[in-house]
Image (cartoon, rainbow, N blue to C red):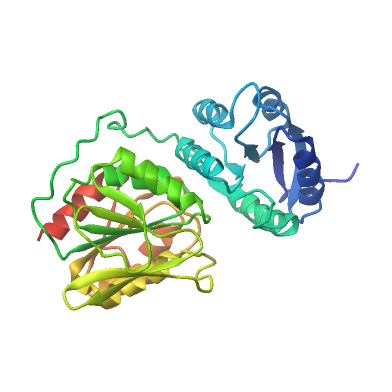
Length: 348
């Protein structure tokens, strides 16, 4: 038997489709640094194989018999937190379920092969993300204490030319929801980049709109930045802040990846530094990589207040760490302090 390299990432594939299990097992197994230790057609078999095979990372389908992937993910994160990458279809139903999976603890959602992404493209990208995900050490982070509290929308009582901007990646779905739950209905206009595939950002925005007092929508080109409204950069597009006189609006355009991402936090933050300057307040939250670090520094140098989420409350202390080391963060604070701090700075 061949000796397995110590650096190989052990992967368990959980999917009810025999075809998907076979293709992923063969294609991923041929990737450098990946060892597929097993497959499972449903969560019950997966549970047994997790105990026996001790994989580093799981790939998980969300629509399965006996127990759906979301329920299984919730149980797994309580009993044995581990990195899980969800494979989902790019359908409205699939996108909505994918967002629920991210909220339940999945570190990333990747589109299944289809018209938009070929098998080769999916496998190459998935292998890269599996290796990155294997380095994540998940912490048991307490759910938002206000999660069950009813959202009461109130009329906006004032306008503001302040701009709040937030960037996040892995772990960001829960982190962003936590922050936005702390915003009142008349909070300053807010722009957010969360690393997410096209189609998924619509469901993400809809979920946040239901759960938060502010109005949340997926950004469209030339949308105005208004008090009480949050604009989410659509997957597959960069979002930048623009200014016309005293009014702000956003530009939503395709472009090359920046820091390996589209949408990119870096792109948004750079534009905010240019057009809003000291009128902006920025925060960089949990995420893998370095996207946004230089942009946050540009914001700080332009007079904006800037914050980074601290390591203890991050799912992945990658993006915040890079920003802190670059001197971009004015303060490093727990996730629970981000919303009040941003609002306090914006009110000055």
